[in-house]
Length: 431
Image (cartoon, rainbow, N blue to C red; front, side):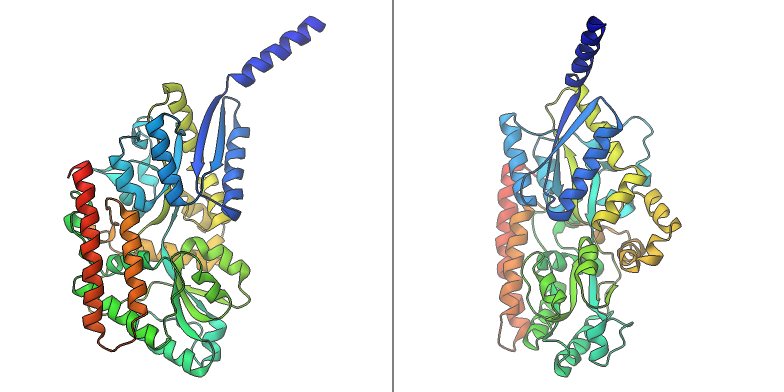
């Protein structure tokens, strides 16, 4: 009997150590970290052959940099979460295994939500696995609207309406400011996409590598002129480069906020007032494009064994399952990745009870699927966003009245710097 027990224990030990271990680097912190851990735990418990080990590796930028550096030294993870501005960098890194190459024949990529599929596809092939996609929407404080004498069920839909409502809110004393932005450089990109304007040449870098930005043209200048005017009248309150603007909104310092849809859950949970959401306001006289994808996807890195790659694919298939995608959406506010998941959420009445989560879908699915609105693909996009953020900061600090001249100067300077970045990138990686 003892011998039998020993044999069983040895076999169990061998089975345990024969598991294929997959390392997963990501940039999710706070409640999103818990959501990632829950998904990984669920996968590990769903079978006995694969063990996924998830590791938080810092911000999006830090995670991207660490992963590429680790690949150069052969110490890289199997999969890594990379934000959308890292797309061109990943394509040129020489480090990736496109996700479509891992899939079995006939895998239904068509079920992926179209704007997500378009953003991360090259020549019709998906290169990374959808995970935490988002877009930007308008949040507004219904209580402040009512206190200012505005209809709390009619948020602004145009720039002119936003400006007039913002002035009324400030003048009434209902709030110190009208609106703030999260991720201002991204909002500037969104403005181009929603108005069907190219941000860079070569169809936003999707037809060929972008060698020149176009944001300093007539359209970009008009957007900056509006923002500068808003800032001088306290309609626009600068709120930092990422999520710190949320605080100004949640404390009632501003009545409106343009921010990622990934903040819907946390804003609703934290707010002491009635939160409304709506589509991004537009300038009249321009064609309708679409809001674009933000967030991140999961990339597979090369240099692992065939068995490990097969294990990676099993995990990636797991996270895109409708029930797992549904769980992720409810836990974080990020988009479910597939149309099947959207249907599940609709069938169970989720969107009816959570209309602020529905706003993002209605906005991104009701726009035009045209090249101008499929997203920008730029070399060293991280550095370019930094330049644009600095330009926004200079614009909203301007105290004069010659908005047009100053907007042109600021944007021309930013474009020159960005074009130098693109030129250096092309010299390094080719066009």
